Length: 275
Image 1 (cartoon, helix red, strand yellow):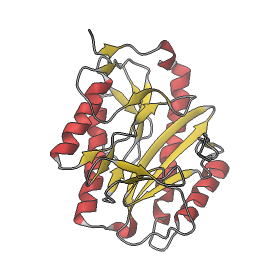
Image 2 (cartoon, rainbow, N blue to C red; image 1 turned 120 degrees about the vertical axis):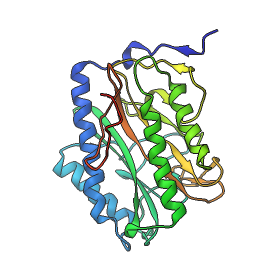
Image 3 (spheres, rainbow, N blue to C red; image 1 turned 120 degrees about the horizontal axis):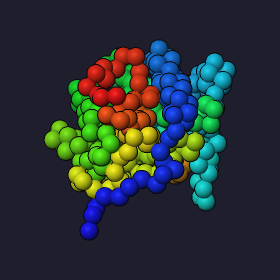
Image 4 (cartoon, one colour; image 1 turned 180 degrees about the vertical axis):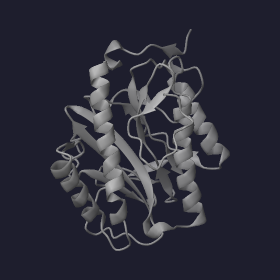
């Protein structure tokens, strides 16, 4: 029995859809660049959220996808435009006036922008004060490279398992761990769509990639164990052992020959990828 399967036709984007995805992706990437000079010791994560809200709504004339998102039984809707995950927070950190950043902290900002009905989703790590510990710096570098390793196998005919395997193999070779409970996802007019993009797995398994698919790769890499814990606010996810965690994310398009990074930032060297 085959361990692979084809994508539903609805997941293949049209040329018009892809153009709109490029715009949304570019706007999301711009937010991460815009906020960079504001990330200094003494700033609160709520202040960063307010700056991003004003930029997305007033400068980009776009919609912050996270604001009001995700209400479920026992869980309130998210009330902010960015997720701010500091140090041992894995993902979905809630901005707060009480969370004051300190020199040496590592911070992930995750932002999703909606423009003309399409989503652009991206995140990255920041070193507060411009420097951090050797361990934290290496963890951030490995998380980014893990994302790139996953992106490097994206092309028509590859599988989701190929992506997860490339990420897991690299991260574990660096003596870190990959979070299992949270993953990447399909994206377009829907924020979180099929397929689930696991950051661990076996080659030649899962959905087969096809030209026109769009999804995120966003590995969460922990300095200790991969297990996590959900806090009482029902959003903030932390490492179970309270060791550091880092994450990077891009929204991607499968092209005829490889991958296009829809949320590419100006400082990135993406020359290794085939468009």
